[in-house]
Length: 118
Image 1 (cartoon, rainbow, N blue to C red):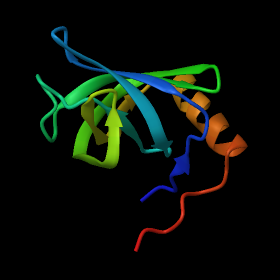
Image 2: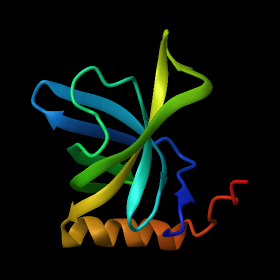
Image 3: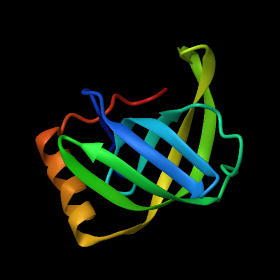
Image 4: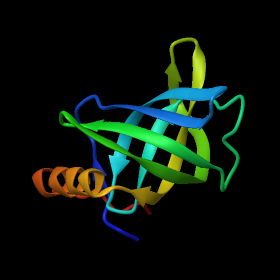
């Protein structure tokens, strides 16, 4: 229920479910409790409630922690190269102090929340 903020500049991420399941991602939006990432469909790992190691770049700051996959859906009308993409929502379950501080700083600088979804 935390306020989400859109990431308007390209911001890369990485999702690691296990050593054989590593995915590049793009950060779509973020809040103090989680993030929405765009990636290619998961081939290994990536079922609901799986916990992944997440690494996100936010305005030159690195955020690293663990996130639980709570939702995934197909991107509407978008493709990543020749493949369809997904949007994956993660709830943060573990962040160190530096990562939490980086998220809070990003949210403070980019405090325009996403519009309400109907």
